Length: 364
Image 1 (spheres, rainbow, N blue to C red):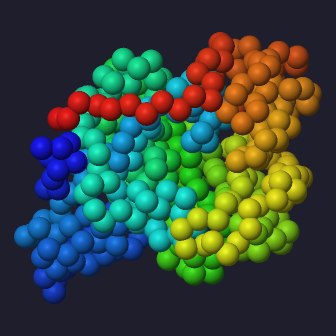
Image 2 (image 1 turned 60 degrees about the horizontal axis):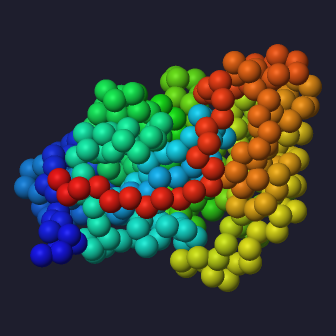
């Protein structure tokens, strides 16, 4: 029997739900608050009512494992140059028409779940592979929160850190428990317009902004923000100025912000690639509001991809795509003026580079 055929749906008990007076179960994990009769699945597809309870059907199941550079998440201020063991499951609680991992996030067939692994296996594999961290990515870890939390706990026992790559679409009920176990996060801020979220992602902006403020003011999680700029959709000067003003006021100058280039995908094939000039313009607008660490991504742009000292303007970490070059940090400070740089840094840059290494874990 093949590995694929051997993988069956999990019936792992799900959390964050209540029983309604009409007999339906309401999921309280994400702001959709899906209301389910017996056998029904939520919008995310992976949370299912079974009897009088909720099941996470993808617990212990993965769409595959890969060792990536941490800069690919993207995280530029979290253990630069190190490798991260990345994996996702199936399903998603957003419906982005431009999803660039749609084959995973929109999966409805179990043949997308090519690997199975326990939390302990994942932590030990990361350690064995020399990865400093494990990333929950490709699809949103919020929807497999129970699995992600268990993996994070196992990783901490092995001295491995964990990273959530997420849209931040999570409720006040679940947010504290989820992020209590994470060391770092990259949050996708899809746009700064509720109309965009509603029309293009089938979601709302407000819960994402609440997550960002929560991370900044109520946790020690290191986090960075990514906005994919789509021509004619979320890249106007007015929206970028508005978003940058909010960012500066609510998150402060030291949270890194990545503006990345769109390419046509999934159900948004009619839009062109993002011109590099658009990313540069967005970076300049954000920096004009006093933000210290603003990056361009998905393009070759050494200036926009590198870290510069807010104190003296010198080059601190040179980046060309995912390759690191010059390194001018000492004890997390600028080598030239001793300015303290926000982030989680070690004495030396890692040497993983831009390699991407698919790996298989033993079946649990």
